[in-house]
Length: 124
Image 1 (tube, rainbow, N blue to C red):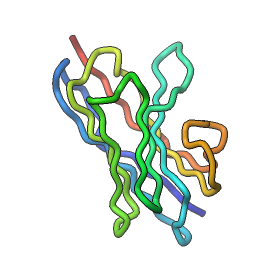
Image 2 (cartoon, one colour):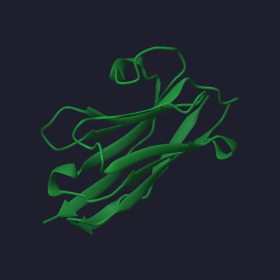
Image 3 (tube, helix red, strand yellow):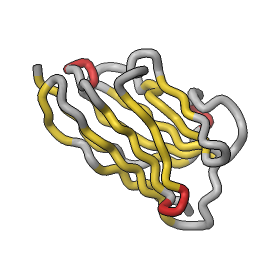
């Protein structure tokens, strides 16, 4: 059983940076990809970024391109989300998730294991 633990969230001001971490533990960890999603109050959960574990291909939502960067540390089974130039509209609970099958990394329903999330609040 794979478990995911997110960390690094907090309360910051617009323009600040945060780095989120997603650490995996449990059974032999060999997923296809890890993704980051976020959900703001009253809104649907949305794709933010993803990285594949073989090859390290990265994907970012248009709303965060140029500001957020996803990366991974294979040795530590950890994925990071570096968030720069944060905006109030980035306020949300951020979740990481893993999918073990090959396919579209932006498809939320394809992810089988989710963390509990970490709150990011950006004040103006």
